[in-house]
Image 1: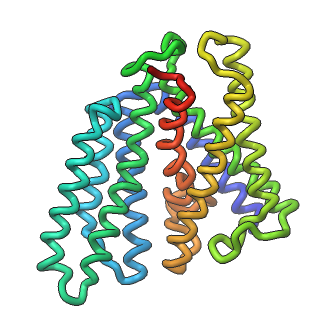
Image 2 (image 1 turned 45 degrees about the horizontal axis):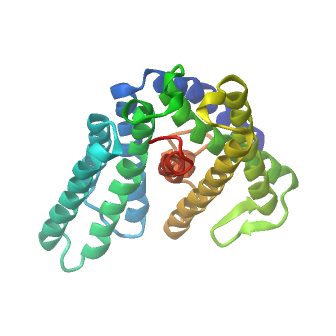
Length: 293
């Protein structure tokens, strides 16, 4: 059973990683379209978890709002340009669902929960994944000494992806092999303390390696081994918090996976839960450490 699940995970990774690199290399509206699809799938899975608990979100409005946030990111390219439009979209979803709830959810349709879940789906799906678009365009919209590097946008998005997924891989294998003490049993019974620590170690190793590469070949960018490791540690923590946060929603719904789209992984939320936290967090870290001006 475990071997079969591992084989499915590897098969999905063998297809997904090259496809992801191609999308990051092409960037622009192609990457925006891909993020729009992921946002729609993530939003729909979150709505399905709520429906299991008897909460009926306004699915059409929520999915349209989620997609609109990503498209606004693609049109604006920078957070500063897109944020006013995205805020307007979120407010529009709130106002529309509040009006619809009067007729379609009152009195016994749990209107407050329906409105809240719809907004949550919009923010989790469109809001968080739009930061992949912002990250890709970041070297084109602000000043950075590394902007002259080949495909700088790809590098900026690939860093949180690599840190998140390598950390997840370390946690998966080390936790299964050596894990005994549970990390947070009420939320995620399968996660262990050893797996959590191993995940952070894997993340830090990726960050240190990236820092070493930049220090060796591109010292003018200001990236070092220590800086790469520290940023990766923050992202490693973010990935695990995102994983546990998604597990809470699944436990409340009483399901093991958010979906079955990706064999061996579950649904889109299961595979991208760490990035829901880490794409916005990476955007923040790049500014905090002074990469951009």
